[in-house]
Length: 470
Image (cartoon, rainbow, N blue to C red; front, side, top):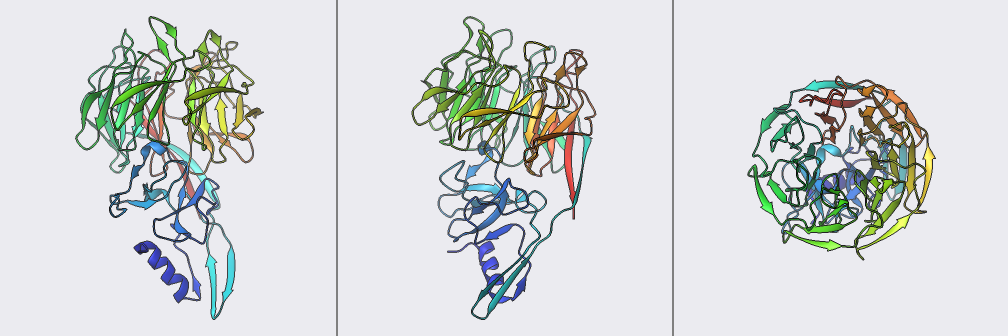
């Protein structure tokens, strides 16, 4: 059976000579092909429909999706069942708010196709101007830095842990629809410099961290109950490590630091279906304060960090074999940097501590097809411990960080992949580093907490919004 949304679309296509297509739908476009002025948007087919679906932003985190109901492909209100092959083989529930305007603006064009007794003309529009703005939102209940923020499948943001002259086990929720913070169940352990990953079942896996001792423990947050439960412990205790949700639903944890053995090269996998950890192949280098990025081919790219010195090395993990292979070295060694997967599949690595000035403004791109690194234009400000967020328009928003000359930064700038240029945008209200930045389902970016540069933890939160007008 063809879904109702597509039935309506088909009816319009064959019942009227001139139509205006619903901007949330795409017809006659191959799976994942561009359907919008924004090249980061693609056609995501609905189960049961032929070359028809929604035009949605392709680069939401895979960890935020949940499978459609197996019996009838149903989803919760506000979500629609589509195929998203980069993330999962089976269909997933996709937020309708990220389909169509304003995130996937339509292209001004007139296409005429002639069939027997039928001419169809599609008319669409393009936004012509945009502006950006920061606004304060309600303060968190707790201040913190080196905490985590996770966007749940219902669009609410879970903020946990961190440091504020103590190591809180706190957890609280931000609801974008009402712009308020509420507390939720506390973690079982207090944690600092740990990881949090949204699983395909909607739960959040927290691993490792530090509170004067290094943890190997892990626990799960259930959004439906607001409670935490312990799960299997990692083989190795670690902090300042990485955790990546793979396309098969498992979580890959890499590297980090252990107070007894120092920097680690070990890696292990968590299986949500069993709650069990298993070791996998070791990385070629020990490292912590590195990055790990899940590529469109399913492999994981690890870059930089600190091991036996500052690293410029990069390596790839293949989930199908459990083997690590080195790939081309970065042009610059760095730690405490960021890595962002762009809409074209390349990875943008920026900033970090470079071992010389202490902060870098350099940027470079990794091409997974050629396994090569190329430099791109430098940021306007050198920074480490910053955040980088891929926006719905494909640009990358970089916020805050630390600069050894001027301390904590409140500046923000945007990288435009098609032109390889940086532009300065308006400053945040608070200077901060070791903070978080989360892309919400409404396209806004929520920035929380951080250190203000004077070893004072912040409880402030603010929103970045890119406005578009027709």
